[in-house]
Image (tube, rainbow, N blue to C red; front, side, top):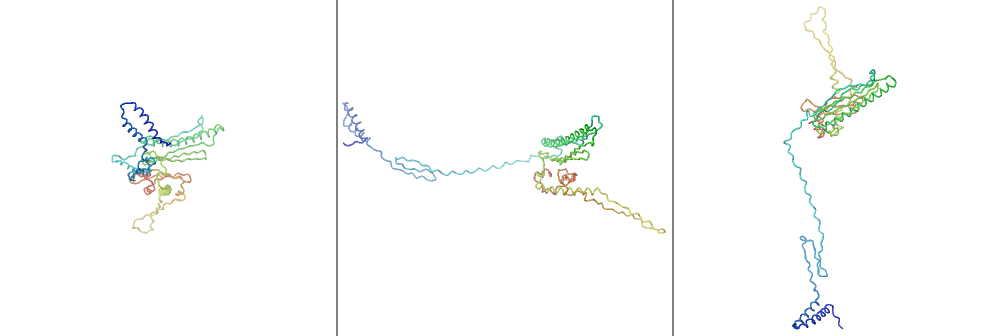
Length: 365
């Protein structure tokens, strides 16, 4: 028996069922019914016709997609990754120009005030018969300043140094008082002195601070120095104002030694020796006027007693006001190896190339 295909079997079963139902109706046209059943069977027997494959060529510039044919007649789109474009950075905008035409020059003259007050005090035994120690010197304070930060900063430094000197004085008093209470006498009284000396050129304020303690033959001293930019409040150091620190220090040490020698020469007065007029011999008539001659002795100094540039262990350079237009000065402070402190005013215009831009504004502004 011939095996019917699945689609044909289904078509026949449907046809038989529909024929049985339709025959029962008297008004059915059997010829047209048979034709319809035949058409229905053909419809179930029809297989899907494979669609021809179509490959679409796409321009590389237009698209990166490629059409691929599949066995089921369907098309699958396969995407080829495209290169990531490199972003072009946006140019950094130029800074806006600032118009300084309406700005005025800052005049720092008298922009701050410094007060120095002398003081003296002493400590005694309860019956005031024995003096233990004395404390003398001065106190410095910046009483007013346009830049309050600079004022407060330098006052903190100065007050701290004074407090240290005052503490040394209290220690001396306690030491000698203890000796007095133990033995009833003291061997030596003590003394503490403190001194503040300031320099300014209207822009910077520099302070030299010294306190010394002496008890009998024992002597001790401390020296400190601070310089502040009273416009900005910055603490000024050598490295912050010059491009060649060692070069400027060498130049100022030499200038200080030369200034000390010149000052020593000024203090020497030439010695003038008068030559007496000769007395004419007896019986001789002198018609010419008498002439008195003077002998001048050139001043001399002992070079060995004067410090040399190499004798200074520490050097400080304080901006100083100048009375001459276009001339800029500093006070050079040198601490010599023998403990003596030397000072001298020095012109610094020949050293201008050793200062950086900030140092030029502070020392030459």
